[in-house]
Structure formats: C-alpha cells, structure tokens
Length: 193
Length: 193
DNA sequence: CCCAATAATTGACCGCAGTCATTTTTATAT
DNA sequence: ATATAAAAATGACTGCGGTCAATTATTGGG
Image (cartoon, rainbow over all chains, first blue to last red; front, top):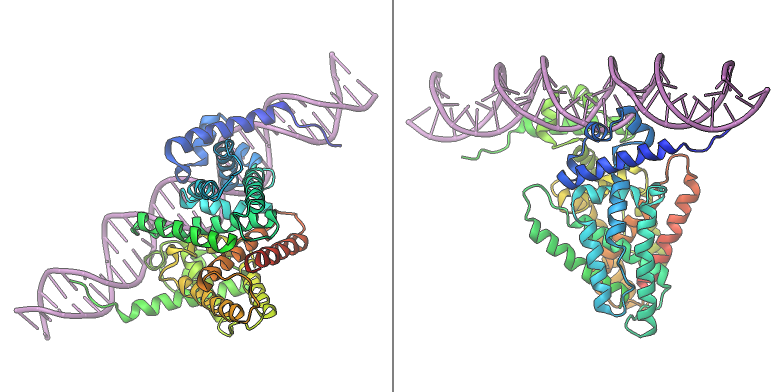
C-alpha cells in the first residue's frame, strides 16, 4: 500500500538544497563535497543519497533552480537585437564553467525530469519560440520554419557554443570564449537567415 | 633544456590504450577501471596518470580513435537522402550511451586537442561542409549560408539530439530515442530549408 | 666511458562518492 | 490506545580515482 510523502521528507530535502546553495555560493560547484552538505544540513550521508541518486543530480537541481531564477525576468524578444541579447544571456549562464556544461549535457534531456532542469529549459525555449514567431511576422527572420523547432535548434546552438567555450587547462580563456561567441553569432544567423 | 620524447613513452602509452580498447570492447566504457587498465598494460597506477590527466581523458582518446575509424569510410553526401543518412550515422554513434555524450560534451571543444577528438570532429564537419556545398549548388538546400558554418550548426544539432536521446533510468529507451531522431530530422530541415 | 641532468615509472597512500544492514520515526488499521 | 507495516534516517564501510615523494632508466655533454 502506498502512503503519502511525509512532511519531514520535504523539509530534509530543502535543508540539503539550502546547504548546497550556500556551499556553491561560497566555493562553486566543483568544490562541493557531499560530506559538507550533509554536515550543514544536519543529516547523515545516507540521507543525501536517499534523496538524490548522485552528487551530479543534486548539483543539477541546484543549477536548475539558480538558472530558473536568473531567467525569471526574461521577456520575449521583439527584434533581432533583443533576440541576440537573450541568446547571449543564456550562453553566458551555460558557459559559466565546465561543471555547468557537463550537467547540462547530462540533464538537459529526459534525464533532467523532476529536477527542475526540464522546466528551466522549457522556459527558455518558450521565450525563444515566442520571439521567433514575432520576428517572423515582422519579416525580421527569413526562416519560415516552425518557431518551436527553431527555438529548440537555437538552444542546441547555444549548448554547442557553451561547450566550445570551455578551454583546456592553461589555454587563453578570453580568446576561446570570444571565438565561441562569434561561432554562436554565425550559426544563429545561418539558422535564422 | 628540452629533450626528445623517449620511445618507451610511446610504447607505454600504446600498451595503456590497447588495454583500454580490450576492456571497453568487453564491458563498455562505464565499466572501465583504471586499476584494470594498468594491470593489463603491466604498468603502475601512477604511470597511467602520467600519460592521461584523468580517466575521462583516457576514455575520450579511446572514443575518438574508435569513432574516427568508424567514420573513415564517409563520403561527402550528394543528395538530401545521403546527407540524412550521414547525420543518422553520426547521431547513432554519438547517442550510443550516456558516457559517450558526456565525453563529447567535455572534449568536443578546445579541451579535446591532442586526443584525436578534434581530428574526429573536424573530419565529420569537413564531410558535412562538402556535402552542403554540393547540395547548395544543386539547389537541394535552400539555405545559402556558408557551408562551413552550416556544417558546424548541423553538428550542434546532432550533439543536442544525442543528449536528448539519453533517458532516465527505467524510461522507455526505444521511445526516447525515436523522439530524439525525429527532433534531429525536424531541426535539420528547419536549418537547411 | 662516465657523470650529472632530466624523463619515466613506481606503488603506498588519501579523499570522497556511493552502499546497505540496522535503527528510528510516522501512518494507519483494529 | 496499541500493534504493525511502511517510510525515513543513520553511519560504518567499501571501492576507485587521483597524488606524490622516492626510485629507476635514458640522454647528452665533456
């Protein structure tokens, strides 16, 4: 017989996430250790893994939460400049660091369900689709394909550019990132016409 | 003063890679343990990490090697059907498993230099660019953008579709993959017109 | 041929993610 | 109330990726 989820379950989960938020804010995702999360949250190690299948899934939940908040103020772009600005904003967030790229690669798809990742991505895609639709009717976008499909393709381009923006150790981060941004710009124009 | 690389260095590296190849062939990338690689190669653990910065970089080298061999027979597509077939071939290889997707995300960019990853990706992009150029002149592709940029964008779409093809544990793998393939098809048509 | 200087290798060791048998808490049936 | 079955939490333990000071092999100069 199935029973309803207990209130303390959600409370524990929240304490873990809150602890994670603090740690990431202080030292970034790469430096987050589950032992410390658990210490701050006041739970045992096993509890962590009863709530999240692994460290990455936990980080993905935190990441989705943060990005969703950051993107909350997004408005559907009304011209090419605004569309570019929106894409740049998303690119900057996605390309922030190697951890972010890895988490997006793993959880941007079906694997991200129930972590908020799917909601975050959908939010971005919806805004993009709205913007594309507007620009199409105004003749500011040559490509007549379905706005939803174009939006998804734009996301794909952003993902790829973000991955390309990660540089090898001791590489020139500035230059690599500039090249990735230029690539995104070119690909976007190739897609939208 | 810098000295030339010793012959045994390359020999050791090859023994490690050969061991890795065997292990991956037998049990897939996910099950590869460095201890076993080292055991088969007849070296110490430290030697492994003197040659490869971490397990993933080693796997990426193996993956690039395998994919490059698989793609060796690629011919530049001459019509839309052949282009689709080529994209499907690459998609199938990239979407093979979650490990592959993760490695591509991490090493498809500048981080993959010197692992063969860059060469593998460039090979695919070049073929795609050739194909796109041919189809453009034959009027089989509406999009007039630079073939090189279009080829890179196509790769981005394939990467994204491959990531979308990974399903959560206990999901219906067949259905998820079918959806990802359909998505790739739609995005490709949206891009090429 | 010998002797520094450098490159390559070694393996004991460590940190941390992830496991699981056990214990504690909570919900429900009687 | 009390029993009992399910859910949640516990923490000692394990396995494996990665490190590093010490050791061995190679090279090139005198």
